[in-house]
Length: 266
Image (cartoon, rainbow, N blue to C red; front, side, top):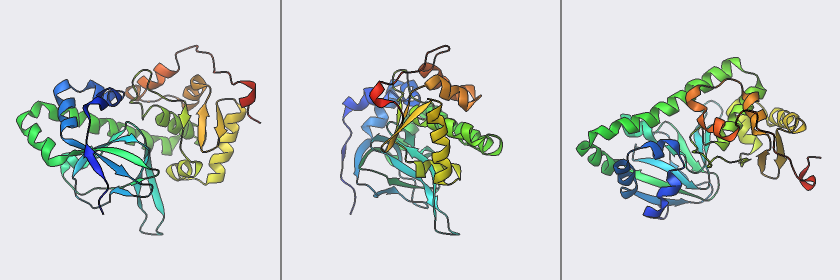
C-alpha cells in the first residue's frame, strides 16, 4: 500500500526558504520544484525508498524526521548515516547520476516529505538547463559534509565529533538561514552512538560531561543547547563553507543562555 499523498501547496514556499540552498535558488527553479512535487505522508517505520531502489525523486522533509542509512550485510545491524528533519533536502545524487538508491530512507516518527518527481523536473531542466548548476550545488554541499565527517572520524576527539553532530542537527547541517536554527535537538542518544560508531553508554557519559559544563541540558527525548558559543568553540575549526549558520547563532562574545531555576540540571 502506497503512502497517502497530495499536491504541494504554494504557501510552503516561506518555510522551504529557511534552507540556505533552496533560498539561494532562482525563483523560477523554486517554483518549478514545488509545482512538480507532492506531499507524501509516512507513518513511523514506513519507508520512503530503499537501497537499490529506482532514483525517482528529490526529497525534502516538511515535518517529522527520517533516518538515512543501510543494513550491514555482515551482522544485519542498522547503519545510520544521517537523521534528517525539516527542511532538509536529500536524494539529489540519484537524481543526477540516475543510479539506484545507495541508502534506505525510513520515517522515525510520523512524517511529511515533499517529493519532486524526477521525470517531471528533468523535463523542465531539459528546457532550462542553466538550473542544473543549482542542483549540483546541493550535491556539492553534501560532498563537503561527507569529507568533513571522514576527517572528523580520523582526527578528532569524541567530544569534538559530538559537538559537531549537535551543531549540524540544530543548523540543518549548516543550511539554516538566519533565525531558522534551533536550540532543541530531537536526536536519540542511541542514534548519535550509531552515527559516531560508539556505545550509547559512551555517548551518555560525554553528554553528561557537556551538561556539567553548562553547554547543554538533557531532557526527556531531546537535548537543549543552552550555550551555543561554547558548543561552537568545542567543535573546533570547521570548513568555512559550513560555518555560516553557526556564526549566526553564536556571535563572537555572546553570553551563554541562562536557565530558569526550575530548569537547572540536577
